[in-house]
Length: 347
Image 1: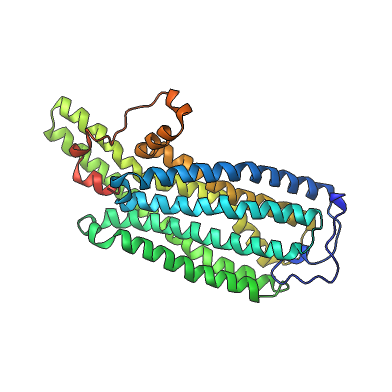
Image 2: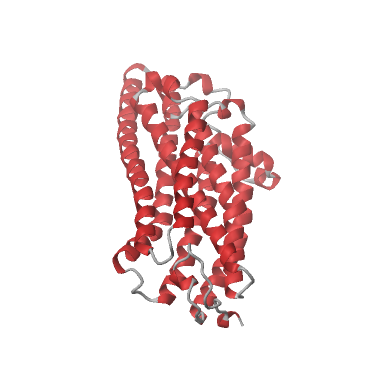
């Protein structure tokens, strides 16, 4: 029976928290939660891979999009999300079911998932840092934007940061003993919190600067443009809303990562003096939320970016039957966009 699955006594799994080391019986609540989480991740993994692959394809097939550092940053984020759906979620389902049914060598399988989870989280957070930094530089240094942010620097910085921080996380997993909960939680918190603080400080600055740009451009249009031209140019201001895509992604990030940070704080404060069932159930909840972020992001990119949305519609014939508003960045009108709008939009 799944609810009678036990961990073999004496088995040492140095990277796992206490509940995966000590032999014990799983309660019915834990078994139900784990099976439900496995089912959710099995379905969402397929959708995550499909949608993120479509977003990446839509960006890379379009010369204008793949040479835009803003859209390339979105492609990098989608690449990290694709990794979650293609590697992390299948390992989560396999390790969870294996743990419930006491499979052979399930400790090694869970250690593998734990390592992959940390790598995926690291790449996802770094891509958000890049997205915030790119928006900040685009608004603060518009005249130097093309010199500061290049495709080569963007990719080099991303892979360098992923390699360095990922190496630290993997080394921590493989070297810190399972009894050292405080040390492991402290290291994880020390790596994640500074990135989150930087992301939000950058976006607050981006948001305030964007609002100033919109007010200034609207004022100029009211003074110098005719009624017909003013109406058309005001429609071009919708390009500025691309900046707020970052805000939506960050909101999803907060909703999905908050449980992780809260649980890390609980471990730091209470250590092991808390309910085992609560620990096991919350574990699958926060990991599932983390995985679902990778499914939500491509929806955000598709809704907010008309070029990506149109490319995805071409790949899925069923979507062609749905109504579609004209794309604000169509080839016919793209030459008439104000320079500052191009900068803010990342083009």
